[in-house]
Length: 127
Image (cartoon, rainbow, N blue to C red; front, side):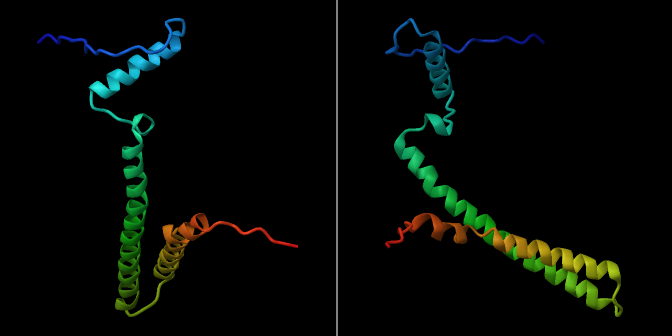
């Protein structure tokens, strides 16, 4: 089998002077990315960028809430395993404390806590 490489033909309009080769290369790179359907965040228009900006906090909150449920399930599982044996072992207690530490750390990573500090303007102290 022989592989054939077909070059991608892209048409672009040059509004930049031909004396700046770096700008021409960047423009060609942007045209190729747009032709292939790849839109990185720095090439998006303002409407697409605002949609992404609105989506990311919702995604963060969803991941954080799913993590809360996962950690509660894990702590419940470790607690049941600890109490079902009939005796307490040091390994089980260490596992429970470790899971509790990570659960508390996860709670402190709340995206809801950072939201209040960013949206409220700081008031200057008047003498």
